[in-house]
Image (cartoon, rainbow, N blue to C red; front, side):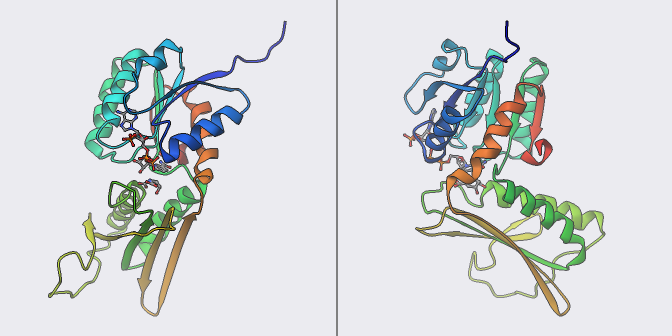
Length: 251
Ligand SMILES: NC(=O)C1=CN([C@@H]2O[C@H](COP(=O)(O)OP(=O)(O)OC[C@H]3O[C@@H](n4cnc5c(N)ncnc54)[C@H](OP(=O)(O)O)[C@@H]3O)[C@@H](O)[C@H]2O)C=CC1
Ligand SMILES: O=C(O)C1=N[C@H](C(=O)O)C[C@H](O)C1
């Protein structure tokens, strides 16, 4: 008799995509994980339950991820979600679905790179010391959404930290603007989205106050940067019922 644990059975949805391919390779190479289903556009999600997947990893698109998640929760399958597009109302819906399935775990993370998580945490910590702040996110041109999920999360965290510190609006005298020149306004924080070939995923948070600026920057040069976070989430979710938002909660 051995006390070795059975490997965790993992299905990947969006398996032929940029992230999905990398996740399949990482799961295949990881100790204690078994890649049992690779599902993409046109395939049945049932393949995941037929293969008795314990965890489904979703890197698809914001318009299909909610249906995938709902189906997995209904089947009692734990889910790790990297797909962007998670607004507060979506998160509330997932929480409501989970009420009927208290043993199921879901981890949703806007960014699985450890450096990006730290960049967001450092930015939230710095926020109260600077009257000015802008976010510049830069991605490959095939990205479907803008601003990125990471930028939206960062803006939320900064806005909360500013409100808690009693900071008012970011100073900005702009009166005459070509539409879009000042970026998108997320909770009072300007976010600029750059799309260019050669980029993978990058973000800068630029803070300013009298006589000084602080720039906090993170760069993912390769999608392997997300894999330690994805593997940690897979191993954690099977022992973590309920909803976890953000990789920072697992580090
Ligand atoms: N949280 C994180 O750390 C990260 C998150 N992301 C996010 O992950 C998502 C995917 O990114 P990326 O891999 O670059 O995108 P891709 O477009 O390369 O991959 C998405 C894949 O999902 C497939 N797909 C679409 N609809 C379905 C469906 N209904 N069922 C199964 N598969 C489907 C697509 O197929 P087809 O092309 O044929 O439509 C495609 O193969 C994005 O939202 C991105 O922002 C990306 C990187 C890191
Ligand atoms: O589409 C991408 O590539 C990425 N998407 C996520 C996001 O929207 O923040 C994470 C990372 O930035 C890469």
